[in-house]
Length: 438
Figure 1 (cartoon, helix red, strand yellow):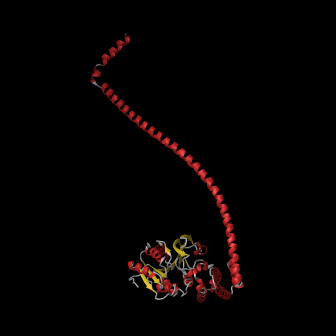
Figure 2 (cartoon, one colour; figure 1 turned 180 degrees about the vertical axis):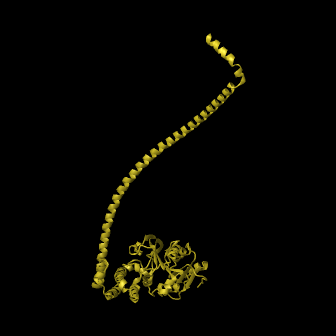
Figure 3 (cartoon, helix red, strand yellow; figure 1 turned 45 degrees about the vertical axis):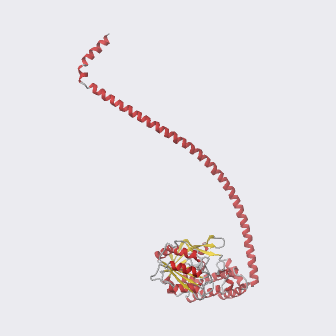
């Protein structure tokens, strides 16, 4: 493992496992950050492909990289804890091995955190589908409507539905490292869902959080072999995370203020897990979820909306088979609604196409009119240039005549004032008199 002699502004911790296909782009997006004073702690979690060779090549060419190599696969949670233990940065961020950071991500987040002296800064994100190579915004990752309308705020100021305010992953959040150490919190040693407890528990405690309303990171989805799409092997992790979070809330005497928020979140989170898991693990997760939700003893008046209330009913009252039939009916209903919406959308598009065509015809007419007027203006400009030239010639001629007149006047004045003119004046008078008499 390479060493870094002095602390950095930001530590970037990246657990990596069998990511040879993606890790080069991920690391390039980090190492080319506009904020250069960073350390990049990479934990290779016993990769079986060429990941380690690629990481060693990067480390050999950039002293900011600290590379750790696990002798056995211990999971992302435990690997992140290793990175946290040796990190030296003022702030720290935990990324996945297929995340792609905007070139200014760390600078924008660090500057915002330093300005406000925040313990955590959350930014916006977008998804990158690795199969279609398309980007899509993720506006639901931050529920701005639940946040206080101020730059810096406490978790206590999120007064309603706290667990829906954010998504409890770490890669869109920059943490003050000492604030984490003060809490003693660590990532859970779970195959999946190992970040839910750590991130949400930290956010529950923090008194200084800030939101940066900029999309600064792209998170990959539809990655082949991703642990998130093989959750049937670790179906219990979601419940393990929820149990740990509930115990934490209880231990901090937060149930009176956060118990209702937790109950609503637990219902929707577990139903999402049930709806996205397959195989024999479904029955196991369904039974365990029912037992956990029943243990919360939720009153019907605690639900924030009818959707959560209905989800709770399905978890408590239906059998696994009935739940699956209900899920099928809901999917078909949503598909039917989607088809109807699609038809309406297509009709709306057709109508808008007609309007657009009419507008294009109007634009064409306006363009023709503008062209005619431009042509007339060009002719007027040419005529004006000709008249200006003629005017200039006339001015020059006038100036020339004026100069000649001035010269003649001067000569006449000189003649009148001459002595010979004065001497012959009487003779000229006699001549003029004789001429009149004749």
